[in-house]
Image 1 (cartoon, rainbow, N blue to C red):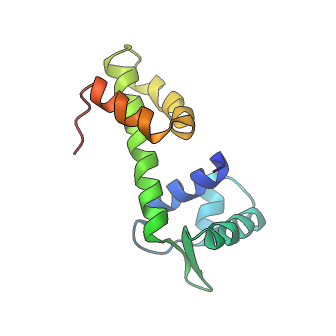
Image 2 (cartoon, one colour):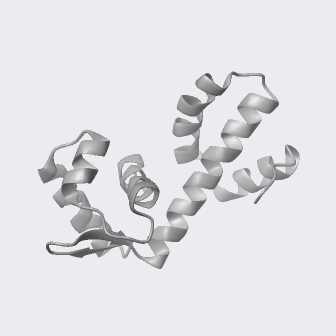
Length: 121
């Protein structure tokens, strides 16, 4: 899945939770055009990641919710590793983790979590 698709799913997860979110809010948050949001939401709906209801907005499906949770987990594992094991500052780790979460397979995230004794809560 492309980083852009993942960014949309993660944004909806972080800003809407179990509720719907408007295309306008997504466009503003991701700094993209409303037309781009409409196009991506349609793609995500076809993939079974979001439900889009006219005039209500978009919400994650269980599949989308699970995907978003896994991305957030990867992000947090990388932040923990970079800060607590490599000595990066809290301000530095976010940007690195934002990139690494998209290229990290689940198996690697699981092994890294075990290696750093990541507190999964």
